[in-house]
Length: 456
Image 1: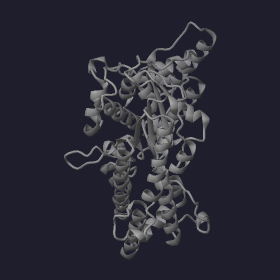
Image 2: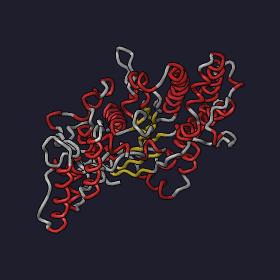
Image 3: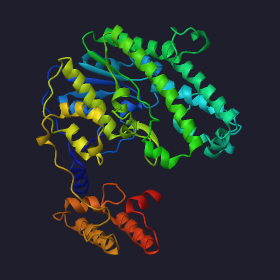
């Protein structure tokens, strides 16, 4: 996946047909070859073309080569089978200076989603079209979202006795996932993390060690994707539904804390280093507020558990800072992918303080920060502070001119304001959207053009 230097250069290069390469730093210390193993979190799933996955940020910062073998949907058993059975992967691992592993999220998510759907089906809370369907063996959270009927859940949980039943089932679920043999009641539960996930990760590390005894191996904990901004809860859910979600958050925290503890012990026993993504994303502040919502896409229109650009920045910063603490690399003033990614964040002024200090240490001298993107108003092609038919006309004229005269070009602001549908082109499709938006505003539509594009 090609990445670009900034939002401005992305638009400019796309319109001119010129390809751009990610700026590459000089090789830093002993990290020249990086191998990434894991699931969709590491693969960069869901990021826009203009955004950087954390592996790309690492490679750019270190001047290193990165081989990313992460696969969306992969469980710990899949990763164990991949290592030592794939010649390409093994060859990369033999040459690796750094191996980063992020796995286990799907083991837990698939198990939890299956249980949640099973309970919901028993309570009559699935959508009508799924009422008699067989619950998938390895469903995703998207399956849960698509199959469960929110109205039925709301009605069911409004009854106190039902809420007690749900709470009991959630407790069983969290114990089946996270409880360990140290608990006196351990024999009652499946203990998925202890009996399946950690052994698979341990075997994977052992296989990597056989291939490359000297590689630096890092393993990542898993963040809690259902931690929302408090105001989002207040705006989105009523009290009964919120109570259910709050209960889920507590139970997921229990499971993920157990995973963090067990993974830490696994890392220590196998000469690996723990990267605590759970704590970094949480960024718990003095008021007790949690900030995982800032680093993932759960509050986006299309709800998504995966890390956003800020999340990938935070993971990369953690890894780089840890390598520095261990004496494996020297941090330097960065004016490459990490800096560009951070400056592209629309809400970078709200970057959680708990993770910001680490990021600052890795970025280095803030005076060398990449320039801020050009200021523009989406759709306001002629910059008259209005979005109307004149902007559509201007885009069509410019599009016709650019198609016949290669010496002509648009300003940075025009490239950004005119690309209404965000397809990295300024053309008749954008003009059509602007005309439709203008017509809608003429008949009472009061939302922004960004909202209009999302809704249509």
